[in-house]
Amino acid sequence: MKFILFLLLLAGGYYYYTTQMNPGASKKINSANLPTSVKALKERIDTRKITKDDVRKLGDAFYKAKNNEARQDTIKLLTYALLATNPGAFSKFKQKINNDYPEQGYLDFVSSEFPDTCNSCAGEGSGKCTKCKGTAKCMNQKCTEGRIIYKGFNDQTVNNQCPVCRGKDECSTCIGSGLSALPCKSCKGSGFKNTQATAIAKYKEAIKSL
Ligand SMILES: [Zn+2]
Ligand SMILES: [Zn+2]
Ligand SMILES: [Zn+2]
Image 1 (tube, rainbow, N blue to C red):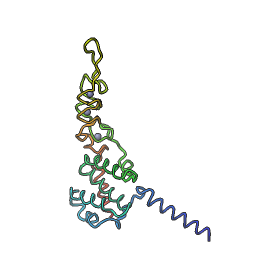
Image 2: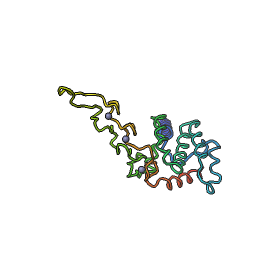
Image 3: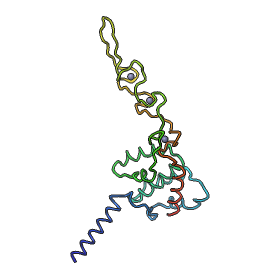
Image 4: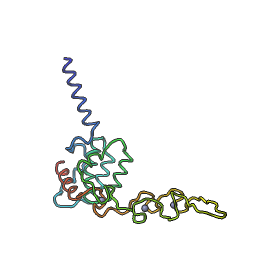
């Protein structure tokens, strides 16, 4: 009897671990958790393109999801749809999700499903800032680490804050990121190689399996 109890506890613990602790582990999407607006995307999947409205529906479903599992499933579909239609929007979306849900790891699956980082932008999704050429430093030539230093009257050293960067020694165009506001030309901003075709295939496969 004790042994059976032990087995039950073990099974229960494993179930808890796989469902709660590791939401990205299960590959199959559980359509029972999804709202009808998302399930309806299955209809006509072969005959039409992924639209902005589809992306919006998936976004709604993600934020309104009742539980962690549903959120994990909808974010998967949403990620595929975004990478398929607007790769540049994905890096912004990723930042937002990592800010809003820092502990959940909702996007952990992305690196295993899209393992090839774009060489041109090193996975950043943007090219280099054209103003500072990626150095991220202040572009005032007289500025040294945020200070303007020169010899004044009577050989006195004058040491003033740089008026361009206000002492921060940051490029004002990219606010010290070194990155362009425009998406990387090579990956269209996704940060991965060959993303769109893969994302479309993954999206269709996932939607069909609902
Ligand atoms: Zn790139
Ligand atoms: Zn810059
Ligand atoms: Zn400066």
